[in-house]
Image (cartoon, rainbow, N blue to C red):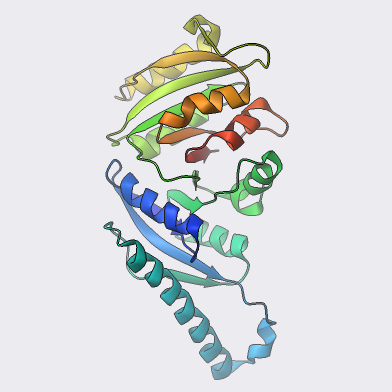
Length: 265
């Protein structure tokens, strides 16, 4: 059973992430711990010490729990949560990062609808939380059905890392999986190349997945612009790859993909 940390706020992004996560549970053996971070504007020192500070913290935690419960009740979702919501007080990224390491989660999930801007996407995935997380990071952009996933390969992708992380998460998945080996080309139309263009690395990757009992649907090598390739992937329910480099075509591709993206490292 996969132990996932699902971050929720009272907004549209969290609403979509919550509904997507519950759909994902139909295809993966996963349980979620709902988490919410309260980062008060007021100086925490103003809360005083001792029992005054404890009462202040209890009030903040109760407000956070009510936020999460309202969202879950409003969405009327049917998925399994592990106990009460985890309410954290302090810096958003640092508190979540500490929780991921301390409680040994295997997947992090949050909604983020503003990722089509390349700079915004890059700033998100290079934050302290994303850079230092011990788990794959799932960014939910839109509400789709995760019945079909695609492993995005190509320049800068360490296929050994992608394969091992994917198998840890999806070894018991019931969704179908394709492989897309991406080659950047800004001129002309999207082209489907012979799989030999993926080189020996692609063959080894396919073999590794097969030897671990995973059946792959299509395996394709694509040449085109990031925007063209992103549009091609809109029919999938999940894209899985490794963290991209700064100013890379794959970074632009992942920013433009309109479906949830899982980043492994």
